[in-house]
Each structure stands twice: as structure tokens, then as C-alpha cells.
Length: 467
Image (tube, rainbow, N blue to C red; front, top):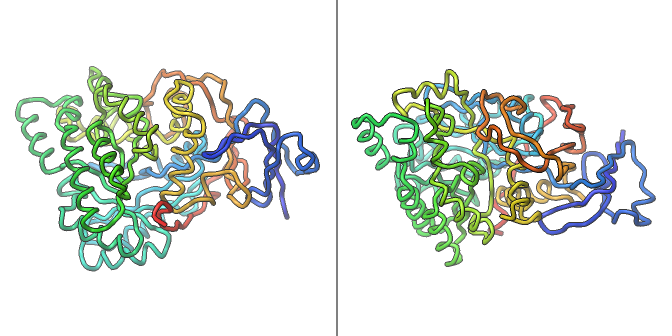
């Protein structure tokens, strides 16, 4: 049975255009757009009509950095693929790219299959995978080629977390050389983990155990140093590089310098670095533990450099690094020792709204909002134009967005499976009203109508900025 949905009367906003247009959806894809009130649009009929008057009609968000059910520090991220993708839908995100984890001594295939199994039949929205490489050797390097062909075309390496995910410069260089050959994209957690571990040990020896010291030992200069080193290794390998969760002004400067040389170097930041700071890490009574993530929150003065980077395109993507741990029973594992606090914040539900607030505040324009949250992540990770835009032939991942409603972010009302909000009490202007995933309504006028299992694994091509 062919089904047709018509979205009438809204302002369609993509990375390229803003146009008052009606959108016709047929069999899960965008069939056509026509100016509102035009003869073409007037002739359309549909099984369902959605009135988008005074609303934005935008592509579903693409969050290219989430960690559902991630094992970390003796516990697991509190969102499952079911709860996490449902929360993503509530926040106007219709595609996530999560991280499958290779365990040291095991194959990439084994790690990827474990993540396929976790997600299969559980997701409310579409999903893809990146591959975390914890063990770079001859056999895992060969596996990279096969994964790229399978649609898992990006690989994350860590300069941090010695003894867990850490790779040394030689391993990183080898993986980059392989990616240069097979079209894969290396994603880098750029912090000097060896030096950080020394500073952690010294801080704890001085009795500095509170959450705020997490930010003090993970110094901005050690993020910048690792970013610089990653860029030089990528140059030697002739490989592109995508630096995840950039938080420090000095690291942005390294990316900008590389891009000024014309190098294929890309950077991502996250809402927490744009809206939160070390003031949160310093909250009393261990409340600061809620804000422990890596790279860490920085002093407020770094925020201006991040916003500037987003405006100048030295940073291209805003993802969440959604990796929630409950305050009670999980973050509390680090009472008396900040190094034992599980690293990660909840945010998959808040990203689109926070970035719309940035439009309201004048940091970015409307089309740039869609570019950094939808179109660029889709292009960066080989999903465009199936995802990230509203155009004939694209998947009908569409959000009806009310730009006027004022809402207060709170753990009382969010849908993420975590007992606190990183943005508790913050008011933002704008709210997701209705969400379609491949033409199926999953949020209908602020009611969840989706289901676990609707979301499909989406194989990806290679980075579209390199073609």
C-alpha cells in the first residue's frame, strides 16, 4: 500500500535554503517540494496532512557521536538503544551513529557483531556504527578494509585512557595509513593520556579528589598537543582526520592552522562545551560529578573560540557524545577519587533545541544550525543526501519545529534514561513538535507514537568531503 503524507504551510529550512514550501512524502521518502500556495502544491492529495503553519520544517538531526550501553569504568551507560533512540526522537534527531567497541585481543568483527546484536530490533530511529579500535595489529588493519565495504567507514582511536582504549603513535600511524588506502575516516580522541595519568596520580597524592580536579588535570594544552600530533601523523600517512569533542581554544587553533594549509582535517564540538563550563564541575556536594566527561568542560572563556570556529567552519559538526551515567550509583563510584567517576554526559535529546537557542542568541544562523546538526554530519559520514536534507529522493526524516515555544530543560520531563539533566532549569526557545522517521510519525504533537524496531541499520559510504 502506497502512503502519502503532506506537510503544508511551513518554512522549510535546509543547510542551503529557506523556502515557504509544502512537502509531499510518499513511501517513506520525500517525493516533491512546491512553493506554498502554488498550483503544483494545490493539486496534491494525501492520506495524512500535517499543518506546519508558523513552524519550521527541518531535516531530522544526525547525531554522529553517541554511546548507548557503553561499558566504562566498571559500569554501563544508562541509555539502551531502545531508551536512547526514543529520547533522540523526542529531541528531533532521526539518525545516530554509535560506537561499536573492539576489546583488546579480540577482532573488530567480534566487537561489531556485539553492537549489531545490542541494537537489532531496539531502535526507534535509524542508526549506523563507527568502530572503536583498541588493538591495532596486522589482522585488525586488514579488517578495516572489510568494514569500510560493509558501511562501517570510520574508526575511532584514542590518545587517552592508557590500558583501556589507548593507541600509541605507531599504531595510530598504521591505522591512518590503512584508512588512506581504503577510504576510511580516522576519528581521534585527542588528549595526551600518558601525561594526564601522571597529573591524576599527583593530584590524588595531594588529596585533590573532588570532581573539579578532573578538569584541572586534563589540561587544555594536553588536548592541543595531542590534536597537533594527530594532525602531523595524518599528514605523514596522507589520511583525513576528524577530531572528536573539541573543547579548548588551543585545540581549535591547531585545527584552524591545519585547515588553512588545505589539509583534510575536521573538528567536532558538543553542546556541553558551548553551554557549560568548569563552574559546573566545581558545584559543591559532589554535584560536579554530573559534569565529568572527557575532554573536560573548560573555563567559560573557551566558549567564544568554539562559537567562532563553528561560524568560520574550522569546526564543522556538533554531536553530543551522549554517554549518560546516573548520579546515584554510577557517578557516585568516584566519591573520594575523581578518577573513578564514569566519564560522560546525557545530551542526545537536547542538542537540536540548544542549537536553536544559539540561533535565537545570534551565535549562528538558521541554515548553519541545520548544517552543523544535520547536513554536515550526514556528509562527513557518508549518509548524504539520504539523510540530512529535505529534497526529492531523501529519506522522509522530517521535524516540524515550533520556534516560539519556551521550554525548561529538566530531568523531570526529559526521556533519557538518566536521573539528572546537565541543563537542569535552563530555558530555551523552540521545541520539537512532530517527527517523522522514513515517513512514519514517531512523535505526533509531543506524543511518542514510534516503536522499538522501526529504526534500521544504515550502511554508510565514505566521507563525502574527500571525493
